Image 1 (cartoon, rainbow, N blue to C red):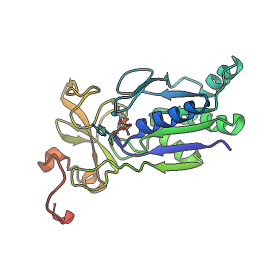
Image 2: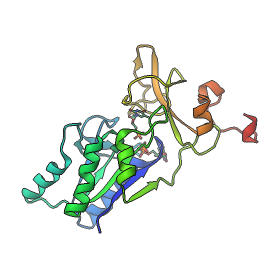
Image 3: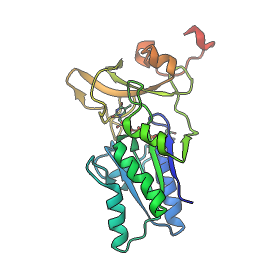
Image 4: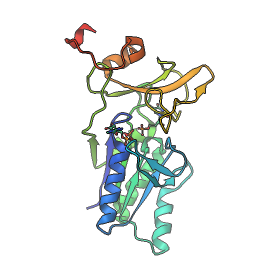
Length: 226
Ligand SMILES: Nc1ncnc2c1ncn2[C@@H]1O[C@H](COP(=O)(O)OP(=O)(O)O)[C@@H](O)[C@H]1O
Ligand SMILES: Cc1cn([C@H]2C[C@H](O)[C@@H](COP(=O)(O)O)O2)c(=O)[nH]c1=O
């Protein structure tokens, strides 16, 4: 039975890697699918993993009808057994509904990957709809860690190392101060924009590693002391 599954976690926890692995494993067994994404750090129409894999993908723009896309491919004689949807938090709620309809009406398996919450700690609209509609919600097993060593649960946007809570919802970028291929992210007017994953405690307190004065986990416990 086809399913809509939402695989989620913070930035840098392996979502794109898992997306590409699941696509590879299905393809290796003769299944045929479509890889989709939106605003990948490596550029338009590709899914990139920090482990080095880059795969061509359909770029999901806000006006793209995902139901029409799949039906069109099928009408043209293509087999579509599954969809791998990366950066799914950027899809519109309507596009998530189209994905659910593809599962129910055409039996297409849909695996969606994305963040649940934005840099403010608020649900992305696409993720909210995925949580509402998904048959299963899977939290990635390889957790990213906060600078304090706790499991990271939140994504902070930083400008010159300090956490910000104002700004556009969508700002493509990478964790710490690295750009898509490891070089420092381009300086922006007002400072260098990057992301850092934090535990809830440090997200609420806006304590990034730069603010805490550490780039690695604490060597001295207890955690409460920090
Ligand atoms: N040099 C490395 N050696 C081993 N694993 C790495 C290395 N660089 C990145 N990774 C792994 O890749 C993960 C990030 O994968 P990626 O699919 O790009 O994440 P996401 O899509 O969730 O942002 C990291 O959490 C880490 O487990
Ligand atoms: C929290 C947050 C993130 N983004 C952007 C930054 C990256 O380009 C992607 C997440 O990519 P990853 O594969 O999960 O590392 O999303 C954003 O635009 N707005 C945000 O609030």
